[in-house]
Image (tube, rainbow, N blue to C red; front, side):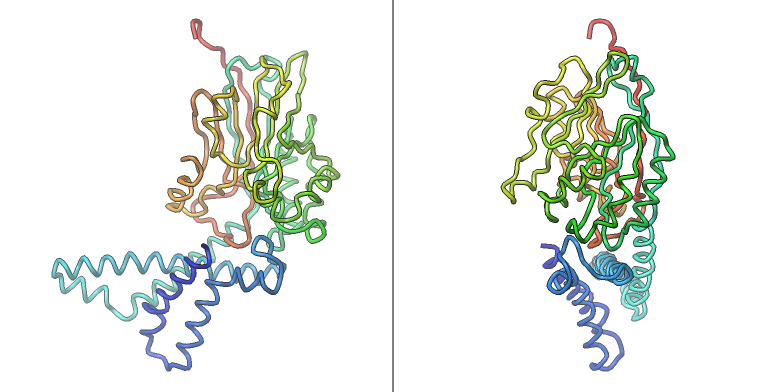
Length: 380
């Protein structure tokens, strides 16, 4: 689907920008083919170097391709806006507006702006995420956990673009927060265990008194799920697959549950199962659920979850695009939500997939939650 949409937009850009240029056919032809190749570069790279999920090409090449592809998408969007405005101007018989919108330099200039904006977006996508601090009130949280600090990492996407050096910086920033617990809500890696061994190694340096707990996202399934599970545990993580663990303090308990990702269905692996994850858990202990996707938040709230931590959406990548992304994720895309008595937080993520590496107005993040006790009013 991505390739089909990209190809259609590329043909539109060629028609509206490349073909009208006052250049010889020997120049317009190759330039048009370059635009089409950018639209299809995921397929081309997957054919010769890795997969669509994990392009195994140099970092600089991935960055250049990502910049070109994002510029293509932005330019196509801007052209649609201009052409709609041109159509309206013609219908309203506004000759000055028509002439202004048909100026030969307008669309090439917009193309240059799209390229510059794309380059900025890729730089933001590759930046080390900033720390965001959030207080979360949990009803009848045991006093022993009032002030407890949980650091969430998600969508790290260690790859040839976001390499071990970048991951090490994320780990250093995370450790500097001195959390009580670190949780990772999926999409740690893009690629095979062999390809990403050096890139994920810094994750073994994450430190917290109550350890590091992780779940899988959809991208772990794209890159050797069965091999990644023991590999992640070797890094010192407790990986929850439809299971839970208990954090204890001064006789009080906090349940941390984790579920798998729905893409497991493609591979004949266990689907997410919250009932199984909570089997045997103390019904009086507050539950923090790690679920890569926010889609099932309402169903999870109905089962007594106090706080759900998710990722997957990357916050929508670009301001405006978040409105499309949230439609595919149960209406949730970025930040905190109150969902039927449950708190949901959808992180923008620390990293992103190399195939669409832009962030414009949607910064990456490392999120630190401070749990606060909220006493239910009498009569509730």
